Image (tube, rainbow, N blue to C red; front, side, top):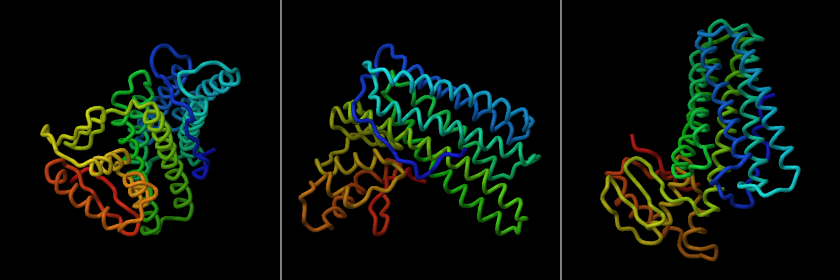
Length: 317
């Protein structure tokens, strides 16, 4: 069954120590490999290079393997024992990874059930987004090497945004070209399932980022030519140091951590100025203006105002 987009989003409650041997990390990495293999077969099937029925069977076998790995993880967690990653985080990650595999299998099943001969362009593009997400996920789950984790999770956020755009355009195209009701229902269903898998990939990214932040291992954030080194409290643009005030640094940190996503004004004010701040909200806009002047022109990023909501940091065009 396709994953439920309204499912609860648990987060880890205890920070991990992701170094050394760990059976739970091994299981997470095995799930990442299995998802990547499934996504590769899905793309081959959508492109017509692998027969749909054959591709579905391969993905079904991989999905059964993923179920077995997830079952091993949940059974392991039933026995109290020290783990390198908090049990709540492991449960959340395993559930989301299982959902991703289920979604890929469900998309392949729809292709086989409908006896698709040629996928529409939007479906092929969404399949490619699923594959790119699986590639980033596979690398992000190498939890023994967390140094560049945010590079992969930021990419997963961008891919989820791209999936949203492709799905929206696909549905619009299906209706505008006066496709048959059968084709509209068929391709809308298939595309929505694939897009849902990118949502679950983003859920995994959110949990991993929470783990990294809670452990204090978040050290370096990068966007375009902009680099923030948290341990040194240093920001550089194209290799040149940029002098920021403490509040400018904190604002940039929040925007970088949520690159491509809107950060609400209330959160920016609360986390940078404190929950008890009752001053003029234009203070935030003023600081954002100063920040733009210092980083936008040469960093390859844009700080975008989202009217009535907050601000978002995007890569420049």
